[in-house]
Length: 479
Image 1 (cartoon, rainbow, N blue to C red):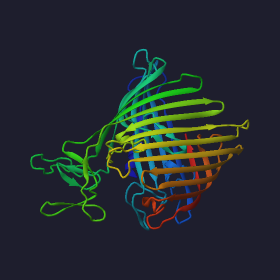
Image 2: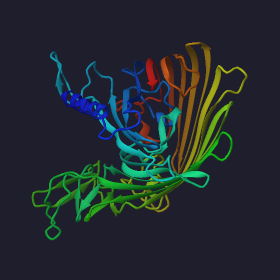
Image 3: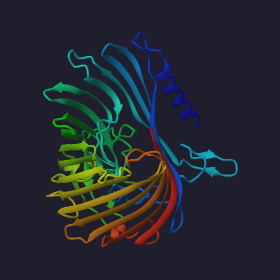
Image 4: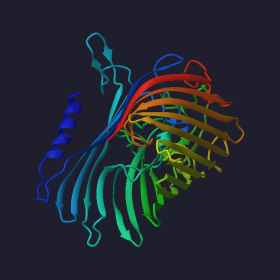
């Protein structure tokens, strides 16, 4: 806790300190964030579970506490020129105890290990109006949420290259604006070799070695470095409309001497240096070497809006590591010849004269073509749909129903089907399903039917259930 307090004090001090140069209006102070937390009961024992919400939906399906606190300050302003500092911390807890710390702590009558994670999400400086004739253009550097695109009902992102980086955005060129960025992330969970010596799956313990002798020379960890080079062009070309084109190039970099493997999950090294490779069953596993390949993704976003509501469509095509189905590439899988095709549509409308009624939806179809990649199947299709009608019954009360359905079909395997049904009552001053400031009472029914052995234990590691019910109370706020 002391380390956390020191970090918080340091952030606040940096934001409130007077800038070195005078500005027109003096520094500003902005405070934004989001939170969720609550309590609930799960029909098979214990607290609320969060089951595959990126496919069946988040409402009544979140079993944790989460908080983001964003502190920002305009440190300098002169005419159209501004310098803005943005910082954010993220906090995630599993709700097991009243005190959930970031490390081992003795509570007097007992002990508790770490059950909360604190992460630095954003720390960047943005300079606006520096380029002559481009008063809206921004030059930025640091750690940043970079122009993310999400599907709120599933609490997932279909385009997100956030991380440490630098770039320039909002350059006025023609009818639209151009943005260019370079960001990076790391990837772990890899099977890897160093000069032919296979190591255990996970984060490498050593990355230095003598290439002549093959002996390791250093003892610090390293993950696979993944660079993203991103270019975007966006603009409003019709009343209430918006169009964006995104091209992103992904470049995983492995240090000299590394190669990565499929198979080879467990490794034993004998006293004489002999390496014995075994899989989880104890049998020999040969595996195949591969190099993470560069990937490319194209995204088009089309938005319509009006007094009736709004609608957004996304079309995506990606290669190699982008074919994981999420916004995050995964070089730890051998997707050397994979491609992904994806269609997404989401929105919210008020279809009747009664503005108290809102109808939200999201639809996603994805086709994976794995080609000659080292995967269990040649192709995969998935389809997900979620609908959420809501009605404002009074100034501070809203009734919501949420239905999420998901199908996954893998070539040569059985279908996976998942369903979620939620009924909720929210105490809230807001009308829309997107502006969250509420205390919600809910009940949720979950069901799965499939032929996939990997989902045999759906809700815990010991028993096999095909359905479950949970109920609870959750607070949520964005500001």
